[in-house]
Image (cartoon, rainbow, N blue to C red; front, side):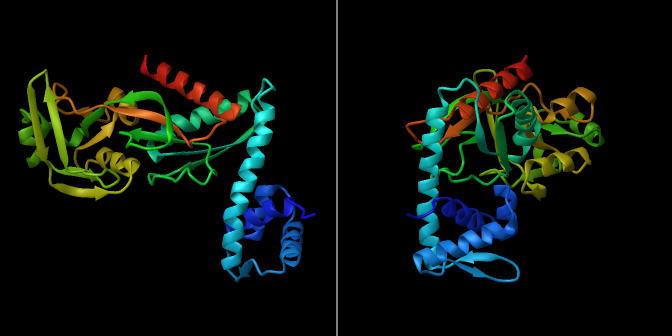
Length: 298
């Protein structure tokens, strides 16, 4: 009978691209990983990996086996997690992906609190503005900030955020002359390339007043934290989420431009793969994240 542990060793090598990093992830020695993968190749009578000086890559047969391994290992994890539901405390590895800005400002502190409360859990958090595919089952949940497209994924609303037009004190004199959205094109604007359309903005005032303006970019940056740094540095004004600029507004490092005009608000969601079972660690973490978001909003 095949030793199924070897599948997990093999999958870790492919995932990390290295026997050394796979050993670190698994908490065993590199020699054990290498030996077990070599034995797996012997059992299957197939070459699964191509080893170079820089990286280990799967062969065609290795890619086929890896895709199957992910499903097999995920099913095994679900089986163990389903049984663990009878235990009060969450256990196991929680894998999360979140945007850079919201992840750093909100999710990371909750991760620290979560692992302190549930020491039998470990968390692997991936921060990045690219949307991760949840279909392969390697990620337990994703945090999505903005507007959710139609999807087969399941979602729970964590909270909402406001988009704020902000600028640094260096632009105070020029901002004072701004009477409405139509005047913004004369000011230096910093575009966030992580957004679908970073130059077009629709402002509203009351129930009827509505203006859409297109702002020429003086600077364009592809991450939200980068845009914030540029605004703080006096490079121009930009639109940023309230959770990212709240402290800077309170301290006077930033000014809210045209506060009587409003930009569309957005949602913050925890998104899960469509599955019949959700581990206790996932629901416990989301509960803590919702509680933290509500506290921050008070």
